Length: 115
Image (cartoon, rainbow, N blue to C red; front, side):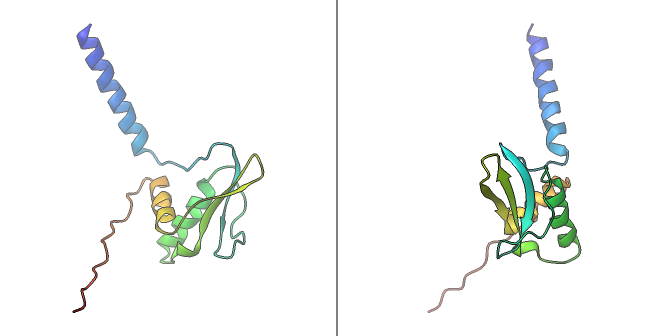
């Protein structure tokens, strides 16, 4: 009986590792559409039932050397409410993660003391 439990734990751990290694998307409960907006709230991508298209657009901009810092991933909830999911560095990290790529390493800014 104990060996069966140990095998089950190993199987579950392997399954979890496999799921975490796959590309992911952002999914908000009760969201019906996702899109990108600029700093003034205008749509800059078409609406999609999945966040995959918007995250792909962020990744394409990032890979082209553009800064997607002025973009926000937004969704519409079943209630009709607009909900901002993420923007800036967190949006870039989400796009990288969706593509199965690691997040960027960031270094805290160094503040110099003034005497």
